[in-house]
Image (cartoon, rainbow, N blue to C red; front, side, top):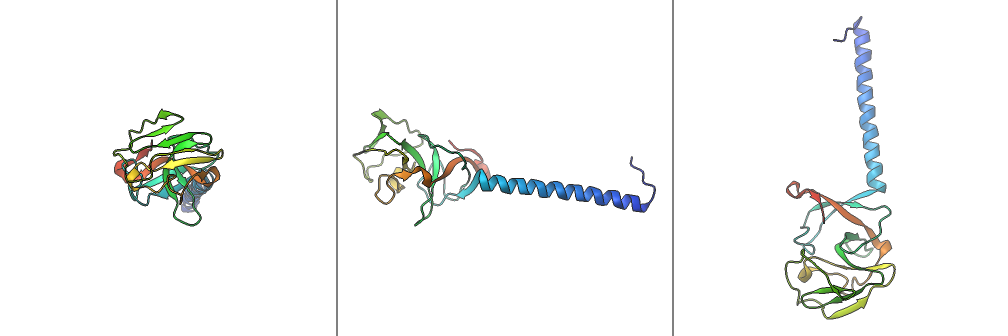
Length: 180
Protein backbone atom coordinates (compact mmCIF):
# COMPACT_ATOMS: atom_id res chain seq x y z
CA UNK A 1 0.00 0.00 0.00
CA UNK A 2 1.23 3.47 -0.86
CA UNK A 3 1.71 5.90 2.00
CA UNK A 4 1.98 9.63 1.62
CA UNK A 5 3.46 12.06 4.14
CA UNK A 6 0.81 14.69 3.50
CA UNK A 7 -2.02 15.72 1.21
CA UNK A 8 0.30 17.74 -1.00
CA UNK A 9 2.49 14.70 -1.74
CA UNK A 10 -0.66 12.70 -2.56
CA UNK A 11 -1.95 15.43 -4.89
CA UNK A 12 1.40 15.69 -6.69
CA UNK A 13 1.53 11.92 -7.14
CA UNK A 14 -2.03 11.80 -8.46
CA UNK A 15 -1.35 14.70 -10.82
CA UNK A 16 1.82 13.01 -12.11
CA UNK A 17 -0.14 9.78 -12.67
CA UNK A 18 -2.81 11.71 -14.61
CA UNK A 19 -0.20 13.50 -16.76
CA UNK A 20 1.50 10.18 -17.53
CA UNK A 21 -1.79 8.63 -18.69
CA UNK A 22 -2.78 11.67 -20.77
CA UNK A 23 0.69 11.72 -22.35
CA UNK A 24 0.45 8.03 -23.23
CA UNK A 25 -3.01 8.49 -24.76
CA UNK A 26 -1.89 11.50 -26.82
CA UNK A 27 1.19 9.59 -28.08
CA UNK A 28 -0.99 6.60 -29.03
CA UNK A 29 -3.46 8.87 -30.84
CA UNK A 30 -0.67 10.61 -32.76
CA UNK A 31 0.84 7.24 -33.73
CA UNK A 32 -2.56 6.01 -34.92
CA UNK A 33 -3.14 9.16 -37.00
CA UNK A 34 0.31 8.85 -38.60
CA UNK A 35 -0.33 5.17 -39.43
CA UNK A 36 -3.67 5.98 -41.05
CA UNK A 37 -2.23 8.90 -43.02
CA UNK A 38 0.80 7.10 -44.43
CA UNK A 39 0.17 3.33 -44.31
CA UNK A 40 -3.56 2.67 -44.12
CA UNK A 41 -6.77 4.25 -45.31
CA UNK A 42 -10.40 3.63 -44.40
CA UNK A 43 -13.09 3.45 -47.10
CA UNK A 44 -16.78 2.56 -47.28
CA UNK A 45 -18.30 0.34 -49.97
CA UNK A 46 -20.88 2.23 -52.01
CA UNK A 47 -23.00 -0.09 -54.13
CA UNK A 48 -23.37 -3.74 -54.98
CA UNK A 49 -20.74 -4.43 -57.64
CA UNK A 50 -18.64 -6.57 -55.27
CA UNK A 51 -21.50 -8.70 -53.84
CA UNK A 52 -21.19 -11.31 -52.32
CA UNK A 53 -17.59 -10.63 -51.29
CA UNK A 54 -18.33 -7.11 -50.06
CA UNK A 55 -21.69 -5.48 -49.48
CA UNK A 56 -22.98 -1.92 -49.54
CA UNK A 57 -21.81 0.11 -46.52
CA UNK A 58 -19.04 -2.32 -45.50
CA UNK A 59 -16.13 -0.37 -44.01
CA UNK A 60 -12.67 -1.44 -45.06
CA UNK A 61 -9.03 -0.81 -44.26
CA UNK A 62 -6.62 -0.46 -47.20
CA UNK A 63 -2.87 -1.00 -47.37
CA UNK A 64 -1.63 2.04 -49.30
CA UNK A 65 2.16 2.28 -49.14
CA UNK A 66 4.54 0.43 -51.45
CA UNK A 67 1.70 -1.57 -52.99
CA UNK A 68 2.14 -3.52 -56.24
CA UNK A 69 -1.11 -5.00 -57.59
CA UNK A 70 -1.46 -8.74 -58.09
CA UNK A 71 -4.19 -10.80 -59.73
CA UNK A 72 -7.02 -11.42 -57.28
CA UNK A 73 -6.38 -8.37 -55.09
CA UNK A 74 -9.39 -6.24 -54.20
CA UNK A 75 -8.39 -2.62 -54.78
CA UNK A 76 -9.79 0.88 -54.61
CA UNK A 77 -9.45 2.92 -57.78
CA UNK A 78 -9.27 6.69 -57.41
CA UNK A 79 -11.19 8.49 -60.14
CA UNK A 80 -11.00 12.26 -60.15
CA UNK A 81 -14.32 12.71 -61.96
CA UNK A 82 -16.40 10.18 -60.01
CA UNK A 83 -16.66 8.13 -56.82
CA UNK A 84 -13.79 5.71 -56.17
CA UNK A 85 -14.33 2.15 -57.41
CA UNK A 86 -13.78 -1.03 -55.41
CA UNK A 87 -12.92 -3.88 -57.79
CA UNK A 88 -10.90 -7.08 -58.12
CA UNK A 89 -7.67 -7.13 -60.17
CA UNK A 90 -8.14 -9.66 -62.97
CA UNK A 91 -5.08 -8.90 -65.07
CA UNK A 92 -1.83 -6.96 -64.67
CA UNK A 93 0.48 -5.42 -67.26
CA UNK A 94 1.24 -7.86 -70.09
CA UNK A 95 -1.64 -10.26 -69.31
CA UNK A 96 -4.09 -11.26 -72.03
CA UNK A 97 -7.63 -11.18 -70.60
CA UNK A 98 -10.52 -12.84 -72.42
CA UNK A 99 -14.08 -12.43 -71.14
CA UNK A 100 -16.84 -14.75 -72.39
CA UNK A 101 -20.48 -15.11 -71.37
CA UNK A 102 -19.65 -17.35 -68.42
CA UNK A 103 -15.90 -17.32 -67.86
CA UNK A 104 -12.74 -15.24 -67.72
CA UNK A 105 -9.40 -16.42 -69.08
CA UNK A 106 -6.05 -14.89 -68.22
CA UNK A 107 -3.16 -15.82 -70.50
CA UNK A 108 -5.25 -18.67 -71.92
CA UNK A 109 -6.04 -20.23 -68.53
CA UNK A 110 -9.55 -20.35 -67.07
CA UNK A 111 -9.71 -18.11 -64.02
CA UNK A 112 -11.03 -19.91 -60.93
CA UNK A 113 -13.57 -17.46 -59.50
CA UNK A 114 -15.46 -18.98 -56.56
CA UNK A 115 -16.48 -15.44 -55.53
CA UNK A 116 -18.67 -15.01 -58.67
CA UNK A 117 -22.12 -16.46 -58.05
CA UNK A 118 -23.77 -16.01 -61.45
CA UNK A 119 -23.10 -15.92 -65.17
CA UNK A 120 -23.01 -12.52 -66.75
CA UNK A 121 -24.56 -12.51 -70.22
CA UNK A 122 -25.94 -8.96 -69.93
CA UNK A 123 -22.57 -7.24 -70.04
CA UNK A 124 -19.87 -6.72 -72.67
CA UNK A 125 -18.44 -10.17 -73.32
CA UNK A 126 -16.52 -11.85 -76.06
CA UNK A 127 -13.67 -9.40 -75.57
CA UNK A 128 -9.97 -10.17 -75.55
CA UNK A 129 -7.46 -7.51 -74.54
CA UNK A 130 -3.81 -7.24 -73.60
CA UNK A 131 -3.30 -5.20 -70.44
CA UNK A 132 -0.72 -2.45 -71.01
CA UNK A 133 2.33 -2.37 -68.76
CA UNK A 134 1.67 -0.06 -65.81
CA UNK A 135 -2.06 -0.82 -65.88
CA UNK A 136 -4.50 -3.35 -64.46
CA UNK A 137 -7.77 -4.83 -65.70
CA UNK A 138 -10.42 -4.83 -62.95
CA UNK A 139 -13.86 -6.37 -62.59
CA UNK A 140 -16.52 -6.43 -59.89
CA UNK A 141 -17.48 -9.78 -58.38
CA UNK A 142 -21.17 -9.14 -59.16
CA UNK A 143 -20.59 -9.09 -62.90
CA UNK A 144 -24.14 -8.14 -63.93
CA UNK A 145 -24.01 -5.05 -61.73
CA UNK A 146 -20.47 -3.78 -62.20
CA UNK A 147 -19.05 -0.96 -64.26
CA UNK A 148 -15.45 -2.06 -64.67
CA UNK A 149 -12.62 -2.47 -67.20
CA UNK A 150 -15.02 -4.04 -69.70
CA UNK A 151 -16.54 -0.60 -70.19
CA UNK A 152 -14.92 2.36 -71.90
CA UNK A 153 -15.83 4.61 -68.95
CA UNK A 154 -13.35 2.67 -66.79
CA UNK A 155 -11.08 0.78 -69.19
CA UNK A 156 -7.56 -0.08 -68.12
CA UNK A 157 -6.63 1.43 -64.76
CA UNK A 158 -3.24 3.07 -64.32
CA UNK A 159 -1.39 1.60 -61.32
CA UNK A 160 -0.85 5.10 -59.91
CA UNK A 161 -4.65 5.47 -59.75
CA UNK A 162 -4.87 2.59 -57.26
CA UNK A 163 -5.39 3.93 -53.75
CA UNK A 164 -4.50 0.59 -52.18
CA UNK A 165 -5.38 -3.02 -51.50
CA UNK A 166 -8.30 -4.00 -49.25
CA UNK A 167 -6.88 -5.94 -46.29
CA UNK A 168 -9.52 -5.86 -43.57
CA UNK A 169 -13.26 -5.31 -43.03
CA UNK A 170 -14.14 -3.77 -39.66
CA UNK A 171 -17.84 -3.06 -40.18
CA UNK A 172 -20.36 -4.58 -39.89
CA UNK A 173 -19.08 -6.32 -36.80
CA UNK A 174 -20.73 -9.58 -37.90
CA UNK A 175 -18.37 -9.67 -40.90
CA UNK A 176 -15.19 -8.38 -39.28
CA UNK A 177 -11.97 -9.92 -40.58
CA UNK A 178 -9.59 -10.14 -43.51
CA UNK A 179 -10.93 -9.87 -47.05
CA UNK A 180 -9.84 -12.41 -49.68
